[in-house]
Image 1: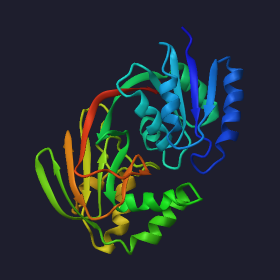
Image 2: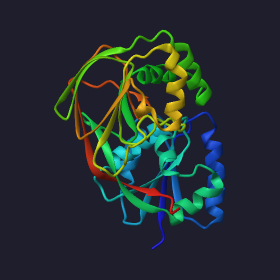
Image 3: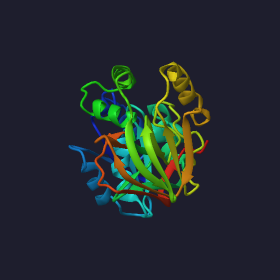
Image 4: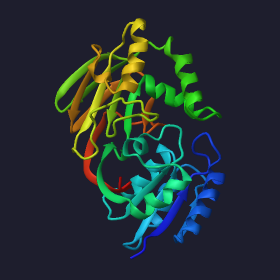
Length: 293
């Protein structure tokens, strides 16, 4: 049977005009004879509600159009259901899409939607909320807070906040438990990862696997400033886990008991968990369309 496509479009995701982009995509899909309907989100949280309402029919494929935050909302509605999800990346980072090589160009999207195959991937869960890329606290969470208040989106804006904040950041004190092993001290950042990167090919957990039923925890302790360029190179070079001030674990359960900072992130967005925050992995929880090749 032919697939029916239900698009959920975030008009303000990422640095570019999403409505203009979807107009071009609409034209391309129509040319290819593909049947689809679309709905535009009007506020945060609406994508979740729309996805819940669209879960019908074995051949229905819900398609999120937006960034990691939009994907999180739609995917969270579909966890542990047979409904399948496709994603068109339009955000600033697009971590999961980059990891899975999901295309964002209009010319390549019809083939992805028509010939893509479904993979059942894991989902992370923090208290009662899901994440599919990363969550955590420390420097990256502070940057997520600054970024959320900015009118400018995109990589340049993100880099600006990193440079503006980095030399003043002293780390956060935290106490947490990884599969029964307790950690206590000061950290530059602690990231719990389901996917291998934040986005923009910044690989915070190079060995992460979306189907291994584990979460990768990357713990970065405060480090001398002279290591800053090394950290950046390692992050984009997929070897951050080999640095002397970085420690990693693959775990099933995390309990975060205290963090000396109010800033926390979940799939790139600011998040405020209740403590103790309990984090676990849900095995093969989401049916996601990925490119055939």
